[in-house]
Length: 79
Image 1 (cartoon, rainbow, N blue to C red):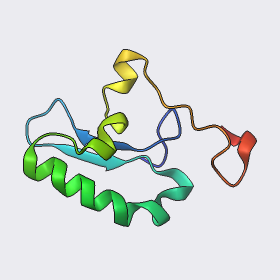
Image 2: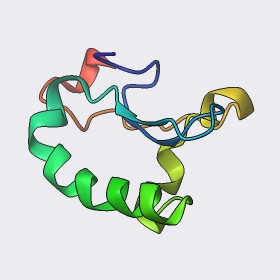
Image 3: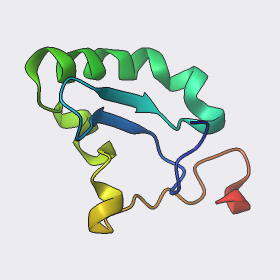
Image 4: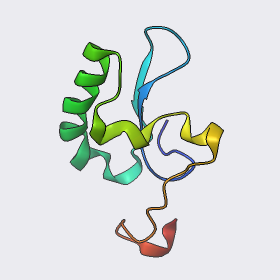
């Protein structure tokens, strides 16, 4: 997946046991994935999200708690 619906990545567990996701980074992923790898490894090893990636869960789309990151990209009006 290239980009999530709210423009922020999805990092965490999925409803399928043993399946984790770190995707949807869009154009900023190449800069942020080294850091996200650290919290993603924690999530996999501990089977729970690291505090830094809790808000990037897949469940945010079910609950309606999507992230509002307007203006953070190279083109502020793109989101």
